[in-house]
Amino acid sequence: MSEERRVSVVTGGALGIGGAISRRLAAGGDLVILNDIDADAAARTRADIEAAGGHCVTVIGDIVEDGTVAKVAEAAPGRVDVLVNNVGDFRPAAPSFQESTPEQWQRLYELNLLHVFKLTHALLPGMIERGSGSIVNNSTVEAFRGIPQHPVYSAFNAGVSAFTRSLAVAVGRHGVRVNAIAPDLANTEQTPVEWMRRGYDEGLEHTWVPLARFGEPDDYAAVVAFLASDDARFVTGHTIPVDGGTLAASGWFVRADDQGWTNRPHRA
Image 1 (cartoon, one colour):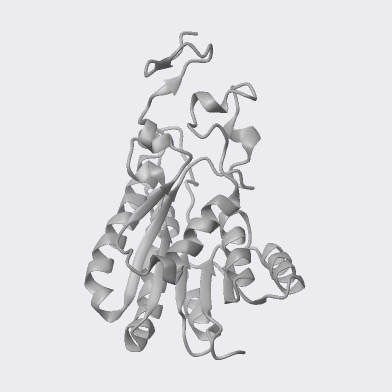
Image 2 (cartoon, helix red, strand yellow):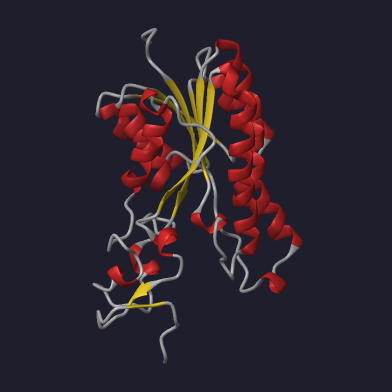
């Protein structure tokens, strides 16, 4: 491996946003340490990366488990330059908070927040020792607005953004930057367009997404790549919404008849 080749760890790096991040970082010349719980998907993504001339090592396992964290750390060839804590999920879900269970809360905690602590804790000392590194976490726009059916998911992702800010302040003097993205409306295997559009006619995306389309995985990967790059060398402690403008709209929607805007629900 070339001395100059950057080493990037991507959790949940096989499919959706994570897969796009792995491919983009590899295309930029990084050795990607790709962790995923889905061995088949990880193998496919690794094959795609290598077919395009990139370099990838896969580490299979659930990143919430200490053993998987250790295997990811061991897979890195002496250093990690970029850590992308991408794993997160709103499932297991319940119809309402009052119908959810402590077991679901625990799993949501592990998937959305605890693993961020664990893997960062494992890899951060090496970055501090070398005096450089970039950490990019995956939060959500739902950390900044209400999401009635998923309040526990929202709370843990708000924790991701708070952790991002606080850690950035603590480690900036060591040359380590910490940022996050906050996605919304990503067209992925987890949340395909058909699922997001349910109940809405095709062509009405502009009524609720200011950029009039859903996000594609590389839309998010591009921002992660920027935050991990030297172009973002003076950016730290921020969560960047990557949402087509939905958070900026703050509940304002274009009327379906295109006669202005409304913040009121449609009548049945």
